[in-house]
Length: 196
Image (spheres, rainbow, N blue to C red):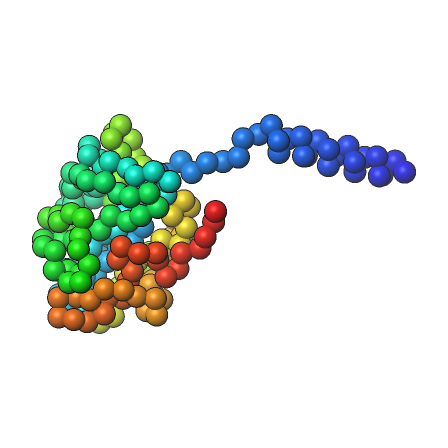
């Protein structure tokens, strides 16, 4: 009988704590969601980066920046990323993904040896990172497969286990020579796990 009372008190206290402690809300409004640092089969310099809006509201990216630790990438973002939508950045021109229009063109290159990307919000705060510990990219590849690096959980930490190769089955887009992109530009990642 005493065990039952103790269990009842324990569970009552646990439920009370669940009710008074607010549930965690996503801190990261926008994630660096996918990176094709190795380029495409048509051109290894045709790199692209995808951002993901994790909120239910459109977000104005004016005043935001995407920077690399190496200094090769310094993008002053502008435009709107739709609620639960994507923002596609293509290097040098809008032909990297020939059949999907990009939201913005950037200059600079992503080193195949690795780098760290930082997404800085309009307040000057780090909103997100990709490969924050530096060194080699945790996923993706260049020649000969040219597979993008996809984030598994867009709200999860920037740790190597939260990045995977595109599965090469769930793909979209064509490169400038008509080859399928081994990635999911401007759409949900092949490795995305729904954590909602």
